[in-house]
Image 1: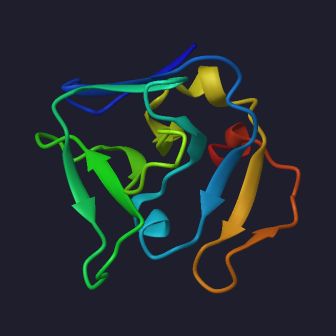
Image 2: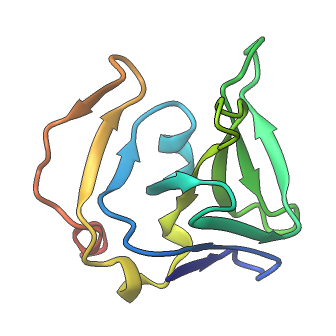
Length: 133
């Protein structure tokens, strides 16, 4: 199990099981937040606890996701899909930058072009630890 917490400790997340590859996205939100995402579904393998506030992208009439953050320290915890799937599940991702470095250092990073093409980009073979060295 992985855990992550905001800076003040007021909000946190857990992710059960292997997170798999993590995603670095270059969209206008993710690049500003500096996030690394691991995915699953709300209240399945991912749970978020504590006080959170949310932000939906300004200027979008029908936003597809909301960003969950701590209202005290503004740490970005997760994103959550705004639409529930027909099976009742809601897609979600947690920000692995809030986990302890040694717990996620070995995870490989995939890059996603959320700014222009919405395509997965070729892997460059780096892991989370490579971002910190």
